[in-house]
Amino acid sequence: MFPAPIERASRPAQFAYQALIPAALVLWLLPLIAVAVFSIRPDADFANANYWGWPSSFEGITNYSKVFFESDMPRYLLNSVLITVPTVIGAVALSCMTGFALGIYKFRANLWIFFLFVAGNFVPFQILMVPVRDLTLDLGLYNTKTGLVLFHIAFQTGFCTLFMRNFIRALPYELIEAARVEGVAEWRIFWFVVLPLMKPAIAALAVLIFTFIWNDYFWAVVLTQGAESQPVTAGITSFNAQYRAAYHLMSAGSIVAALPPVAMFFLMQRHFIAGLTLGAVK
Amino acid sequence: MAPLPPSTAPRPAPGPAPRSWWRRNQIAITPWLFLAPGILFFAVYVLIPVFQSFNVSLYEWDGLGAAEYVGLRNYEEMYWDDAFYTSLRNNVIWLVLYLLAIPAGLAIALFLNQTVTGIRIYKSLFFFPFVISQVVVGLVFSWFYDPSFGLLNVMLGWFGAGPVNVLGDERYVTYGIIAAGLWPQTAYCMILYLTGLNAVDPEQIEAGRLDNAKGFRMLWHIILPQLKPATFIAFVVTIIGALRSFDLISIMTAGGPFGQSRVLSFYMFEVALSEYGFRMGYGAAIAVVLFLIMLVFITYFLWSMYREERGR
Image (cartoon, rainbow over all chains, first blue to last red; front, side, top):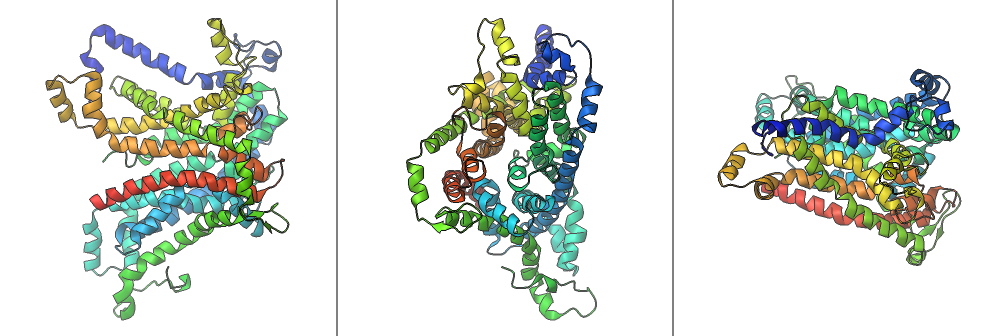
């Protein structure tokens, strides 16, 4: 293990280390802690310029219930869910298939198609913006969740294919050969042999894509406008315009908007990190 | 491409007498059937639009009316456009400074790579900024920088410095936004290195210790070579992240003050889709330049991956 385990160090060094971690953590999360503190302050504190002193009262419940009951925030949150969940399902389904095709079969165009998916995944969004917006308008899907979902599925398929293909490559190929010898049809090999083995990859991808799509801002701004279809990342700006200078409410709103992926991360931590760091270890 | 329309997608009953043509060609055709929906989606929404953008960049078009062919005039306009050069310069600054996330992430990973009690929760909390949307990161940091109540100026005040209006000052604005971007990016690099450090060969470390390698020499000669895959991924995601920077700029400054914090991705959006007018052609031309910059890196990434694949 590197660096040397702290247990081998002297007593004082160990104590110093134990004290240093929380201190470093507080420093690291300081901007976030500040916002969390803001979100439970009363309005009056901001009027009296009491930004960093002890809050004159704790208004956490008032502030957060305002966000939930007196603003469009629930609507935006619902939109985000209705955009994110279908995207996750669609992208994972498509990439299970592409990953299977590219991971199992040997044919001439295999590597080229794979690289096409990988390259497309790295492309800057702006080069797609004008045509995709135009296409969405033509399909009559501008300012709808469907329009956003379709694009997200297509774009995420690039990354998901990269992920799935590499995962399937690492599976024991003998399983497939054995099934073929038995005369099992190819689609049955996919469904009954490979898919069950892909469960960890599917879980990892699902949490990753959930986070990516939930946090998307650019496409939300390009393809939607207005509370009926905008996700929470775009909605938060209108929310902030509505509560200009009401920092306690804007802080509470931001925390609410950020929370779902955070919850997802803490619930599915193992899968999340396994997904993010795929390929970081040989 | 798959010659078969999806409607013929076969579901051959593995009965006693399967069609022999299908049986003979099953292995050649199946991958194309599995690829068809993915390729279709990806082509319509990603591959074809790239070429369409190249085409649009040769037109003057407001997105609604008729497009007028203007040849390379959009590119000529770009050549004389000061805002374009400001954006380009900022893109370079982003690229260079964003790479700091890699050593910073490594440093935090080394700091946290211990087995004391509660370390797991510390690791998760350090990783936390990456999970939050950039929109919220942008908001959080713009309040952090706020000249009247931001924590930054409170802290500067302790040292008798400040107040500094980071986001209102054209000298600091880009650096201020990059610092906000480095926060989640460093967390990402940290998690990559933590995973990498987990897999470092303990025997080599012990061998190094016997050879009296310590501290930095050990890190440089024994640990870092083994972390190469993690470094490669950190490099890829950081470059992509730097060139994709849009959310933070849009939230924190909207390109200001006086357009000094624009980057190409934001400037393109501004030209094509904001109140400055709907100039799709000019926007597409800027996007093409951004794409070509990215293409250099994409080629390098793919080349590395290709060598890897051949090496197998």
